[in-house]
Image (cartoon, rainbow, N blue to C red; front, side, top):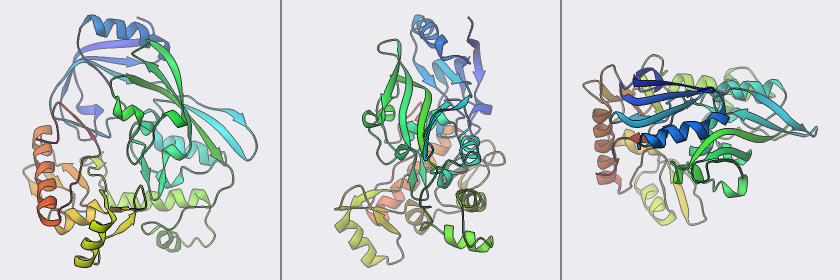
Length: 347
């Protein structure tokens, strides 16, 4: 069994940032993508489902996990083509996302700095098309290298086929088909910095930076995130739990007429707007709420937290209550950002 190690009835408490003590029927740590074909043959013999798990920073376990849980541990980064102004960088799925941003900035490659300190791995970033402070990963992804369970072969999927959208992608739409093994990013060495979002300029000013570079932006955003979001190493959480809803422009204008402080941004088309889920949740009275060990963070209304011994079902129940309350007050549906395992968010 070269290329992977197997364990049975393994706790996943240390493999998800909510620290939910769900258990995996079988856990496979994979250090070589060439082993996936053999591993999937084994998984199919067990006739159970297969789940791929990164750092567990975008997961809520609402039940134990049957079948096989696969963790990819490959962690190399290489520049595979350098054209001076731009470079194509390949990163294995197991690379820590924030470490990858530091690696790119250290080589003068720009674009990812606004996504500093997002937890998780490189392999997870295309699934959710992660983003923060006005930038999304899909803007820079050129190719995603996957193991296709349907054909039982490795495959390269180009940017146009990835179907990137707000917190969405081909890989999210078909979670059971593809195992992301590596991602290639086309990164520029010259680019106008994105500073006009959520206090970035103010933070840079507070740092005494008058002419910021990308490394300064990364530091400013890391400081903002550290202040606003609880550290999952101290308090179990998966970062922002709810997506910012995209609603018809007419509905957004009506809400703005009632609540002039409601933050609103361009949506995915001219007749839609993206509004702040955090504002909706806070103004529905949930920020800092706690029910036993399940709660909403005091620092940020988007963050669902585990104060110690909350179960996945308890956290899910609280999230459903929050969403129902927001809809009853504002007429807006909010949906979860993390993947929920073992249950549906929608009852």
